[in-house]
Amino acid sequence: MKHASAFKPLSISTSVVPIAVFKAQASGYLERLRKDGQPVIITQHGKPAAVVLSTEEYDRIQYKEYVLREIALGEADVEAGRVMETETAIRKVEEARKTRRVQGKK
Image (cartoon, rainbow, N blue to C red):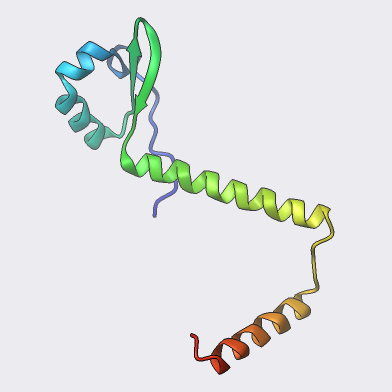
């Protein structure tokens, strides 16, 4: 999975569209999105209401949020003292693997 940002600088004249225009030309906007990855900001009553972006960009954002959440959890564990020496962690993993093998699990 590629994780570099696919976003390009927004072109206000082509990237921000009223909902009525988007509805009338949705397939054209989706085709442009597939070609250049540029998100489309949809307005309703003159105010931003939604952003349409590629599935690749959505996946990238979700992955980034997941990684940041996991880092925060790890930092919280460190601050709370929920840590162990590397050797202890390795031993516990090896013991868990042996137990799983004995129980017939992979």
